[in-house]
Image 1 (cartoon, chains in turn blue, green):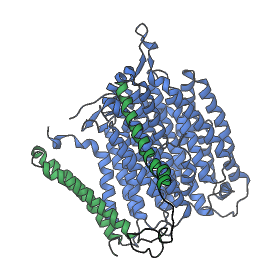
Image 2: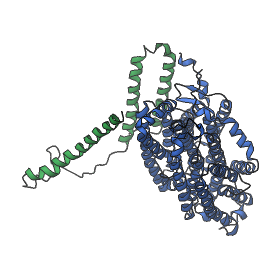
Image 3: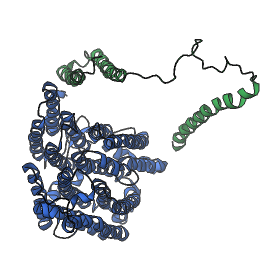
Image 4: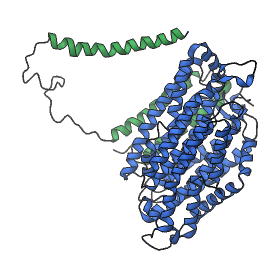
Length: 512
Length: 125
């Protein structure tokens, strides 16, 4: 076998971004210190569009892999890569408008760290080897650590970066320790090999270590999606980070966390059967569908803590941080309410749908927050006062994003939540669905507080609030996305159902 | 097999316990019993290789030491990777072009790092 003859074209989306990051790094070094680096942002957006094109080309093709599945292209990974690419593209548009040479002296670095973080996220979605997945996780994490602390002179930014790196390293340690148990039982880091060997280890009396590995992997990875038990970093880090980075953490980093959680947990643990029922195969008991009870507890706690703590926040970014914690709880529900292999495909599709909707509405909200906070020079919720009178369109768009986050009808957020609610009801997880409804009602309180500030409180000034063209474009795009997906959700749902193939997670695929 | 797997943890636990117990026993329990207690001014002075200690215990380093150390580590690791690569190059002859390209990319990435440090004036003292 000649390594040169392998189909390296599979790496096209990642290679595009890596080459882009390398080129921008060199260009940043050559450019004079005073030079305007906004051009890097636009070049990156062009590169991301090319990468989206390559990813769309790969969508729908059978599973292919390179180097013993340490890199693979499958429908699951490609769908997630599209989420990351589109999200990062929008974050770039936000950043170009946000970056201020006074505040962020290293603006060149900002652009290519965003790109390397994107590469990390993409690797997290398209590998079936724990080592490679971990490299992707750390690439994303380390780039984020630097981006969080990139406002070098800002005390909060520094504090946030410090907290983020400490909690991140602890979680990585827990994750790796959990993986070491699984490796000890199976002797492989390849997910597909592990999924073959782990059931045998489980039935041969190692069930305790399988449980231990399951919990430690779950706890270690819960940090990336900011779910209980490691959600505490979220408010501080979201507050201290520059707003586009906050948006990146809330959307892309979280989606990448879900990608790696689904990939590892589902591929490794679903094949483990605790009790065969030969008479009636539909009654066969699986390890994973019993262990999801613990996932359900995590999801419930995440929803309760996120939503109740958000009520007490007066800082807009802290509020959105806790709201994103709560949303992590909602997105976990389909995974936590899996009760048989039959519903898995639709459950994971629902999660992907929710992540897309979450991406659109959250990027919309963060764009508005960027504009308003810049203008008022404070991140307090009071900065939204009188927004409707200063810029009616911005006010309406923001209210619609918040309505969508709260999950009220005629918005995409409602459809996404409703899907999840129905999937939980059909498998009779009534208590989980109940907690979801109750905590959603609690969340109305803080979302509508912002809306009330915009319409019913007088602002400091009545001056018109101007919005740059590119940000107007982003807000329009997000508004249309939330509205159209609220009215015609089937276009996207059908796209996901058609392109997502659950069997891809378990097939080895082929190598050309 | 379960037995053996748990057994290896047992030995680790014993090692950890012994590792903690021994110094504790030696320093905290045995030493106070058998050592004579005649403190004098010279004896309670901080020991510094037989030389009289001078100045403050807190010494400030230039932060550049760390940057130099970091750069050194980067290129040290590069050597660690390059050496087995060079040693095994002959046996990898069927992939030679591929392996060469791979190492070129690796070195190129490190050179970007060096150029970055250079441009950011890390190397100027």
